[in-house]
Image 1 (cartoon, one colour):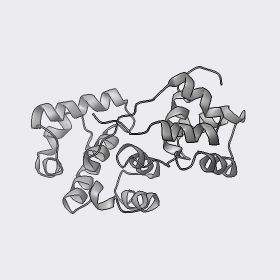
Image 2 (image 1 turned 60 degrees about the vertical axis):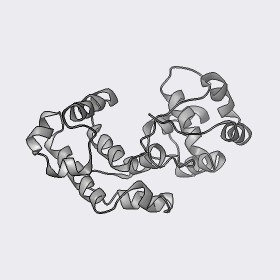
Image 3 (image 1 turned 180 degrees about the horizontal axis):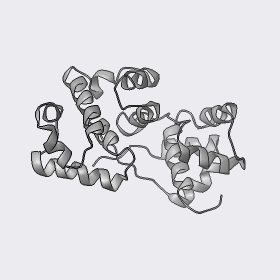
Image 4 (image 1 turned 45 degrees about the vertical axis):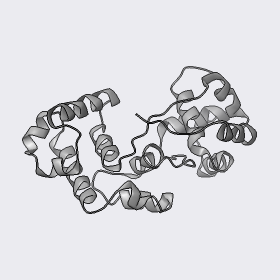
Length: 203
């Protein structure tokens, strides 16, 4: 599995622009985050993971692989739905994945969207049933590997930022201020904010 690529260039810039992140960088070291380069796979797995754990999603995906080999859009469009449901995919999620599969067959790929801006990619992905804003923005990070993404609707990100500035809530102005300070490497900052939010530790 590939990992999001970043290094000392991004970390040095964040240390200068947001010194409070230096504590996290020193404490957590390099944080590895897996990416999924194939857009159909990334979206299908994201749909399956809705309301279940990542571990459970991987179990379901493994069942599909064990039965059919590497899943493809064509598989989801032609296979008996009951067989796929037996792998652990609900009917609702299967309907979403079939819509994504049809879009992929019609030419929706990472390569076709790569020239677009972040906002344009998100708008295109949100046209798919089952794909909301948060999920589209997660695709920017974990499929397209865009380096300047800070997701305003992500609970972990907001929790970490509130702890950083010792507030219960963040205004839009506060959030935009952090976004500007982390640019152009807000995605890398996000990795450290998620790690901070997920641990019981102080600054």
